[in-house]
Image (cartoon, rainbow, N blue to C red; front, side, top):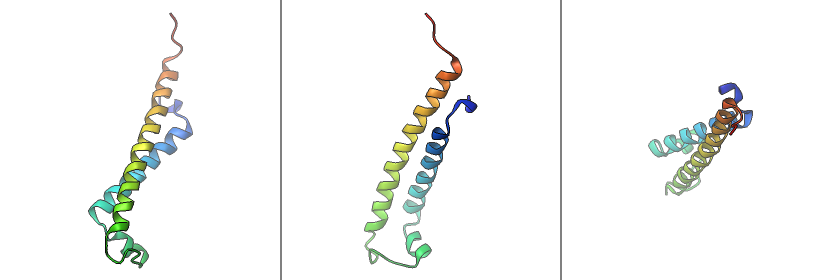
Length: 84
């Protein structure tokens, strides 16, 4: 069945994984943005971190649903045409 999954499905699954990782990273370690880039765009208010958490969560849900649709289509293609 995995051979029947289109490239789009793989990209969506990878995007869901990466956005989920970003969600968890920001939730567990909110100051990673300041550490990684050396800037503090919200002057330690935490507003940017919550925006990143919210956007990453939404992206994870959307990409997961899109990837799920692709995997279901691949499963239907693998099962063959329904006659009846």
